[in-house]
Length: 99
Image: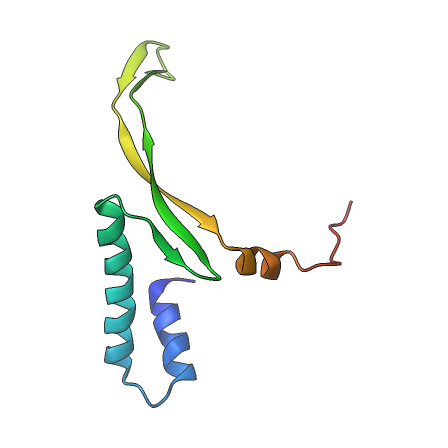
């Protein structure tokens, strides 16, 4: 699902809200999550999951074409951990996976 599909789904479910207001709400929520992560803060949405930032140290990698060592700088990467309710919805009890 992309952002516009999310906005449309919410608009369909809540016809009393203006489409432009729903777009603004969704944008503000995503912006706040992004801003919090950029400050190194953790964002937890109960029942859904938690967003955090993982720091990756500098390392030496290899150029796949030449095989030469390449220095890779330290960086931060977003990380998402699904919450218990989301995991349970994806993997209902008693629902075995086919072998």
